[in-house]
Amino acid sequence: MPHDVLCGSSHPTAKMAAHRSCVLWSYCGRRWSWVMRCYELPGLRSAWAGGQLGARQLSQKKQATETHFGFETVSEEEKGGKVYHVFESVAKKYDVMNDMMSLGIHRIWKDLLLWKMRPFPGTQLLDVAGGTGDIAFRFLNYVQAQHKGKQKRQLRAHQNLSWEEIAKKYQNEEDPLGGSRVVVCDINKEMLKIGKQKAHAQGYKAGLAWVLGDAEELPFDDDKFDVYTVAFGIRNVTHIDQALQEAHRVLKPGGRFLCLEFSQVNNPLISRLYDLYSFQVIPVLGEVIAGDWKSYQYLVESIRQFPPQEEFKEMIEDAGFEKVTYESLTSGIVAIHSGFKL
Image (cartoon, rainbow, N blue to C red; front, top):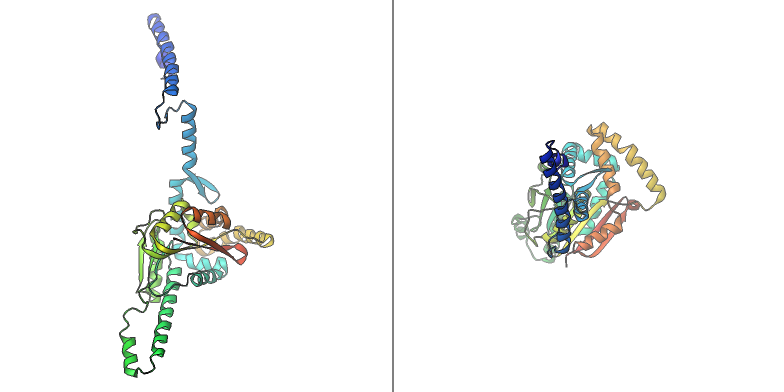
Protein backbone atom coordinates (compact mmCIF):
# COMPACT_ATOMS: atom_id res chain seq x y z
CA MET A 1 0.00 0.00 0.00
CA PRO A 2 1.45 3.43 -0.91
CA HIS A 3 2.83 5.40 2.09
CA ASP A 4 1.05 8.66 1.19
CA VAL A 5 -2.34 6.94 1.05
CA LEU A 6 -1.88 5.18 4.38
CA CYS A 7 -0.28 8.09 6.25
CA GLY A 8 -1.34 11.16 4.26
CA SER A 9 -4.18 12.59 6.49
CA SER A 10 -3.69 16.10 7.80
CA HIS A 11 -5.94 15.76 10.93
CA PRO A 12 -3.81 15.34 14.14
CA THR A 13 -5.81 12.39 15.49
CA ALA A 14 -5.96 10.73 12.12
CA LYS A 15 -2.24 11.41 11.65
CA MET A 16 -1.37 9.67 14.91
CA ALA A 17 -3.58 6.69 14.04
CA ALA A 18 -2.14 6.53 10.59
CA HIS A 19 1.42 6.65 12.00
CA ARG A 20 0.62 3.73 14.29
CA SER A 21 -0.91 1.89 11.33
CA CYS A 22 2.28 2.44 9.31
CA VAL A 23 4.45 1.09 12.10
CA LEU A 24 2.13 -1.87 12.62
CA TRP A 25 1.98 -2.56 8.87
CA SER A 26 5.79 -2.42 8.60
CA TYR A 27 6.19 -4.71 11.62
CA CYS A 28 3.62 -7.19 10.39
CA GLY A 29 5.22 -7.24 6.96
CA ARG A 30 8.61 -8.08 8.50
CA ARG A 31 7.07 -10.76 10.73
CA TRP A 32 5.11 -12.29 7.81
CA SER A 33 8.28 -12.42 5.71
CA TRP A 34 10.08 -14.21 8.58
CA VAL A 35 7.20 -16.64 9.02
CA MET A 36 7.16 -17.43 5.30
CA ARG A 37 10.91 -18.10 5.33
CA CYS A 38 10.74 -20.32 8.39
CA TYR A 39 7.57 -22.25 7.66
CA GLU A 40 7.47 -22.47 3.87
CA LEU A 41 5.60 -25.63 2.85
CA PRO A 42 7.51 -28.25 0.83
CA GLY A 43 6.91 -27.86 -2.91
CA LEU A 44 5.36 -24.40 -2.52
CA ARG A 45 7.43 -21.52 -3.85
CA SER A 46 6.85 -18.03 -2.63
CA ALA A 47 5.39 -15.78 -5.28
CA TRP A 48 6.06 -12.64 -3.22
CA ALA A 49 7.66 -10.31 -5.76
CA GLY A 50 9.31 -8.26 -2.99
CA GLY A 51 11.58 -11.17 -2.04
CA GLN A 52 14.74 -12.25 -3.82
CA LEU A 53 13.16 -15.54 -4.95
CA GLY A 54 10.21 -13.73 -6.48
CA ALA A 55 12.49 -11.32 -8.35
CA ARG A 56 14.64 -14.19 -9.57
CA GLN A 57 11.59 -16.10 -10.83
CA LEU A 58 10.33 -13.07 -12.70
CA SER A 59 13.76 -12.60 -14.28
CA GLN A 60 13.95 -16.26 -15.31
CA LYS A 61 10.42 -16.10 -16.74
CA LYS A 62 11.38 -13.06 -18.80
CA GLN A 63 14.48 -14.83 -20.14
CA ALA A 64 12.52 -18.00 -20.89
CA THR A 65 10.04 -16.13 -23.08
CA GLU A 66 12.69 -14.32 -25.11
CA THR A 67 14.32 -15.73 -28.23
CA HIS A 68 16.00 -14.51 -31.40
CA PHE A 69 14.55 -13.49 -34.72
CA GLY A 70 17.70 -13.23 -36.76
CA PHE A 71 19.92 -10.91 -34.71
CA GLU A 72 16.90 -9.29 -33.05
CA THR A 73 15.70 -10.32 -29.58
CA VAL A 74 11.94 -10.86 -29.47
CA SER A 75 9.37 -12.70 -27.39
CA GLU A 76 8.65 -16.32 -28.32
CA GLU A 77 5.09 -15.44 -29.27
CA GLU A 78 6.29 -12.58 -31.46
CA LYS A 79 8.83 -14.78 -33.29
CA GLY A 80 6.15 -17.19 -34.51
CA GLY A 81 4.21 -14.35 -36.12
CA LYS A 82 7.30 -12.77 -37.64
CA VAL A 83 8.52 -16.04 -39.18
CA TYR A 84 5.04 -16.71 -40.56
CA HIS A 85 5.02 -13.26 -42.19
CA VAL A 86 8.47 -13.86 -43.74
CA PHE A 87 7.39 -17.03 -45.53
CA GLU A 88 4.00 -15.63 -46.40
CA SER A 89 5.83 -12.75 -48.07
CA VAL A 90 8.41 -14.83 -49.97
CA ALA A 91 6.24 -17.85 -50.91
CA LYS A 92 5.65 -16.90 -54.55
CA LYS A 93 9.34 -16.26 -55.25
CA TYR A 94 10.71 -18.86 -52.82
CA ASP A 95 11.90 -21.40 -55.42
CA VAL A 96 13.33 -18.75 -57.75
CA MET A 97 15.23 -17.17 -54.87
CA ASN A 98 16.60 -20.55 -53.79
CA ASP A 99 18.07 -20.99 -57.27
CA MET A 100 19.49 -17.47 -57.30
CA MET A 101 20.91 -17.51 -53.77
CA SER A 102 22.58 -20.91 -54.06
CA LEU A 103 23.35 -20.70 -57.79
CA GLY A 104 21.27 -23.86 -58.13
CA ILE A 105 23.37 -25.90 -55.68
CA HIS A 106 20.37 -26.38 -53.36
CA ARG A 107 19.05 -28.89 -55.92
CA ILE A 108 22.17 -31.04 -55.51
CA TRP A 109 21.90 -30.83 -51.70
CA LYS A 110 18.30 -32.05 -51.85
CA ASP A 111 19.21 -34.84 -54.25
CA LEU A 112 21.90 -35.94 -51.79
CA LEU A 113 19.32 -35.97 -49.00
CA LEU A 114 17.21 -38.43 -51.03
CA TRP A 115 20.27 -40.48 -51.87
CA LYS A 116 21.09 -40.74 -48.16
CA MET A 117 17.47 -41.65 -47.36
CA ARG A 118 17.30 -44.43 -49.98
CA PRO A 119 13.53 -44.92 -49.58
CA PHE A 120 12.04 -48.23 -50.67
CA PRO A 121 8.56 -48.91 -52.11
CA GLY A 122 6.08 -48.70 -49.25
CA THR A 123 7.97 -45.98 -47.33
CA GLN A 124 5.75 -43.56 -45.39
CA LEU A 125 7.45 -40.14 -45.36
CA LEU A 126 6.62 -37.01 -43.38
CA ASP A 127 8.24 -33.89 -44.83
CA VAL A 128 7.98 -31.03 -42.33
CA ALA A 129 8.30 -27.39 -43.41
CA GLY A 130 8.21 -28.71 -46.97
CA GLY A 131 5.61 -26.27 -48.28
CA THR A 132 6.70 -25.95 -51.91
CA GLY A 133 7.18 -29.71 -52.28
CA ASP A 134 10.84 -29.98 -53.34
CA ILE A 135 11.60 -32.97 -51.11
CA ALA A 136 8.18 -34.58 -51.63
CA PHE A 137 8.47 -34.53 -55.44
CA ARG A 138 11.99 -35.97 -55.32
CA PHE A 139 10.74 -38.71 -53.01
CA LEU A 140 7.89 -39.63 -55.33
CA ASN A 141 10.22 -39.71 -58.35
CA TYR A 142 12.69 -41.89 -56.46
CA VAL A 143 10.22 -44.51 -55.17
CA GLN A 144 8.44 -44.66 -58.52
CA ALA A 145 11.75 -45.35 -60.27
CA GLN A 146 12.59 -47.96 -57.63
CA HIS A 147 9.21 -49.64 -58.06
CA LYS A 148 9.51 -49.70 -61.86
CA GLY A 149 12.98 -51.18 -61.59
CA LYS A 150 11.72 -53.88 -59.24
CA GLN A 151 8.84 -54.65 -61.61
CA LYS A 152 11.19 -55.00 -64.59
CA ARG A 153 13.48 -57.32 -62.64
CA GLN A 154 10.52 -59.50 -61.71
CA LEU A 155 9.37 -59.70 -65.34
CA ARG A 156 12.88 -60.59 -66.53
CA ALA A 157 12.94 -63.40 -64.00
CA HIS A 158 9.91 -64.96 -65.73
CA GLN A 159 11.25 -65.66 -69.20
CA ASN A 160 8.30 -67.86 -70.11
CA LEU A 161 5.69 -65.07 -69.82
CA SER A 162 3.87 -64.22 -73.03
CA TRP A 163 3.55 -60.66 -74.36
CA GLU A 164 -0.11 -60.70 -73.27
CA GLU A 165 0.77 -61.72 -69.70
CA ILE A 166 3.41 -59.02 -69.48
CA ALA A 167 0.95 -56.38 -70.78
CA LYS A 168 -1.64 -57.45 -68.22
CA LYS A 169 0.85 -57.12 -65.37
CA TYR A 170 1.56 -53.53 -66.39
CA GLN A 171 -2.13 -52.74 -66.89
CA ASN A 172 -3.12 -54.24 -63.54
CA GLU A 173 -0.56 -52.18 -61.68
CA GLU A 174 -2.81 -49.97 -59.55
CA ASP A 175 -0.15 -48.21 -57.46
CA PRO A 176 2.96 -47.06 -59.35
CA LEU A 177 4.54 -46.06 -56.01
CA GLY A 178 4.34 -49.52 -54.47
CA GLY A 179 2.43 -48.24 -51.46
CA SER A 180 4.72 -45.29 -50.70
CA ARG A 181 3.16 -42.09 -49.38
CA VAL A 182 4.43 -38.63 -48.49
CA VAL A 183 2.72 -36.09 -46.27
CA VAL A 184 3.91 -32.49 -46.60
CA CYS A 185 3.32 -30.61 -43.35
CA ASP A 186 3.83 -26.86 -43.16
CA ILE A 187 2.58 -24.15 -40.81
CA ASN A 188 2.29 -21.58 -43.59
CA LYS A 189 -0.81 -21.59 -45.80
CA GLU A 190 0.85 -19.63 -48.61
CA MET A 191 3.74 -22.07 -48.85
CA LEU A 192 1.33 -25.01 -49.03
CA LYS A 193 -0.69 -23.19 -51.67
CA ILE A 194 2.40 -22.80 -53.86
CA GLY A 195 3.29 -26.45 -53.31
CA LYS A 196 -0.15 -27.63 -54.38
CA GLN A 197 0.00 -25.47 -57.51
CA LYS A 198 3.39 -26.96 -58.42
CA ALA A 199 2.10 -30.51 -57.82
CA HIS A 200 -0.87 -29.90 -60.09
CA ALA A 201 1.28 -28.34 -62.82
CA GLN A 202 3.83 -31.18 -62.70
CA GLY A 203 1.25 -33.96 -62.50
CA TYR A 204 1.85 -35.20 -58.95
CA LYS A 205 -1.36 -36.68 -57.54
CA ALA A 206 -1.00 -40.21 -56.15
CA GLY A 207 0.67 -40.77 -52.80
CA LEU A 208 0.78 -37.09 -51.87
CA ALA A 209 -1.05 -35.22 -49.09
CA TRP A 210 -0.80 -31.63 -47.80
CA VAL A 211 -1.37 -30.85 -44.12
CA LEU A 212 -1.37 -27.52 -42.29
CA GLY A 213 0.50 -28.15 -39.05
CA ASP A 214 3.05 -26.94 -36.52
CA ALA A 215 6.41 -28.74 -36.22
CA GLU A 216 6.24 -28.26 -32.45
CA GLU A 217 2.83 -29.94 -32.19
CA LEU A 218 2.38 -32.30 -35.13
CA PRO A 219 -1.23 -33.36 -35.89
CA PHE A 220 -0.30 -37.05 -36.26
CA ASP A 221 -0.48 -40.20 -34.12
CA ASP A 222 2.54 -41.80 -32.50
CA ASP A 223 4.67 -44.28 -34.49
CA LYS A 224 3.15 -43.36 -37.86
CA PHE A 225 6.00 -42.66 -40.31
CA ASP A 226 9.10 -44.49 -41.55
CA VAL A 227 11.05 -41.34 -42.34
CA TYR A 228 10.87 -37.71 -41.14
CA THR A 229 12.60 -35.03 -43.21
CA VAL A 230 13.00 -31.30 -42.70
CA ALA A 231 14.99 -29.24 -45.22
CA PHE A 232 15.96 -25.64 -44.45
CA GLY A 233 13.10 -25.32 -41.98
CA ILE A 234 14.08 -26.33 -38.47
CA ARG A 235 16.15 -23.19 -37.81
CA ASN A 236 12.93 -21.15 -38.10
CA VAL A 237 11.20 -23.10 -35.33
CA THR A 238 10.91 -21.30 -31.98
CA HIS A 239 11.53 -24.41 -29.84
CA ILE A 240 13.87 -26.67 -31.79
CA ASP A 241 14.06 -29.19 -28.96
CA GLN A 242 10.29 -29.57 -28.96
CA ALA A 243 10.21 -30.06 -32.74
CA LEU A 244 12.85 -32.79 -32.42
CA GLN A 245 10.81 -34.54 -29.72
CA GLU A 246 7.77 -34.43 -31.98
CA ALA A 247 9.82 -35.93 -34.81
CA HIS A 248 10.80 -38.79 -32.51
CA ARG A 249 7.19 -39.31 -31.40
CA VAL A 250 5.65 -39.67 -34.86
CA LEU A 251 8.35 -41.99 -36.22
CA LYS A 252 7.87 -45.75 -36.06
CA PRO A 253 10.43 -47.77 -34.09
CA GLY A 254 13.34 -48.10 -36.50
CA GLY A 255 12.28 -44.89 -38.25
CA ARG A 256 14.79 -42.33 -39.48
CA PHE A 257 15.19 -38.60 -38.93
CA LEU A 258 16.92 -36.59 -41.66
CA CYS A 259 17.59 -32.86 -41.55
CA LEU A 260 19.16 -30.73 -44.26
CA GLU A 261 20.08 -27.34 -42.87
CA PHE A 262 22.57 -24.49 -43.18
CA SER A 263 25.45 -24.98 -40.80
CA GLN A 264 28.91 -23.74 -39.85
CA VAL A 265 31.51 -23.28 -42.59
CA ASN A 266 34.75 -25.07 -41.70
CA ASN A 267 37.10 -23.26 -44.08
CA PRO A 268 38.22 -19.75 -42.91
CA LEU A 269 38.66 -18.33 -46.42
CA ILE A 270 35.32 -19.69 -47.65
CA SER A 271 33.72 -18.48 -44.42
CA ARG A 272 34.78 -14.88 -45.10
CA LEU A 273 33.60 -15.02 -48.70
CA TYR A 274 30.35 -16.67 -47.63
CA ASP A 275 29.68 -13.94 -45.05
CA LEU A 276 30.37 -11.24 -47.63
CA TYR A 277 28.01 -12.87 -50.12
CA SER A 278 25.33 -13.56 -47.51
CA PHE A 279 25.11 -10.06 -46.05
CA GLN A 280 25.96 -7.95 -49.08
CA VAL A 281 24.37 -9.84 -51.97
CA ILE A 282 21.46 -12.00 -50.78
CA PRO A 283 19.33 -9.17 -49.28
CA VAL A 284 19.86 -7.21 -52.51
CA LEU A 285 18.68 -10.21 -54.55
CA GLY A 286 15.68 -10.43 -52.23
CA GLU A 287 14.81 -6.83 -52.92
CA VAL A 288 15.31 -7.07 -56.69
CA ILE A 289 13.59 -10.43 -57.30
CA ALA A 290 11.06 -10.72 -54.48
CA GLY A 291 10.71 -7.06 -53.48
CA ASP A 292 11.58 -8.00 -49.90
CA TRP A 293 14.92 -6.98 -48.40
CA LYS A 294 13.98 -7.56 -44.74
CA SER A 295 12.82 -11.17 -45.13
CA TYR A 296 16.08 -12.21 -46.76
CA GLN A 297 18.09 -10.26 -44.23
CA TYR A 298 16.34 -12.34 -41.56
CA LEU A 299 17.02 -15.60 -43.43
CA VAL A 300 20.74 -14.77 -43.58
CA GLU A 301 20.83 -13.84 -39.89
CA SER A 302 18.87 -16.95 -38.88
CA ILE A 303 21.57 -19.13 -40.46
CA ARG A 304 24.19 -17.53 -38.19
CA GLN A 305 22.03 -18.17 -35.12
CA PHE A 306 21.59 -21.89 -35.82
CA PRO A 307 23.84 -24.20 -33.78
CA PRO A 308 26.92 -25.73 -35.44
CA GLN A 309 27.03 -29.35 -36.55
CA GLU A 310 28.24 -30.96 -33.33
CA GLU A 311 25.90 -28.98 -31.08
CA PHE A 312 22.87 -29.80 -33.23
CA LYS A 313 23.92 -33.47 -33.17
CA GLU A 314 23.73 -33.37 -29.36
CA MET A 315 20.28 -31.78 -29.50
CA ILE A 316 19.06 -34.62 -31.74
CA GLU A 317 20.48 -37.15 -29.28
CA ASP A 318 18.78 -35.37 -26.38
CA ALA A 319 15.44 -35.84 -28.18
CA GLY A 320 15.92 -39.61 -27.98
CA PHE A 321 17.51 -40.44 -31.33
CA GLU A 322 20.38 -42.91 -31.61
CA LYS A 323 23.20 -43.50 -34.08
CA VAL A 324 23.18 -39.76 -34.84
CA THR A 325 25.65 -38.69 -37.51
CA TYR A 326 26.12 -35.73 -39.81
CA GLU A 327 27.78 -34.98 -43.13
CA SER A 328 28.94 -31.49 -44.01
CA LEU A 329 28.44 -30.43 -47.63
CA THR A 330 30.11 -27.60 -49.58
CA SER A 331 32.69 -26.88 -46.82
CA GLY A 332 29.99 -26.90 -44.14
CA ILE A 333 27.65 -24.37 -45.71
CA VAL A 334 25.01 -27.03 -45.16
CA ALA A 335 24.92 -30.32 -43.29
CA ILE A 336 22.73 -33.42 -43.34
CA HIS A 337 22.03 -34.84 -39.89
CA SER A 338 20.70 -38.37 -39.51
CA GLY A 339 19.32 -40.26 -36.52
CA PHE A 340 17.22 -43.34 -35.77
CA LYS A 341 14.39 -44.11 -33.37
CA LEU A 342 15.50 -47.42 -31.86
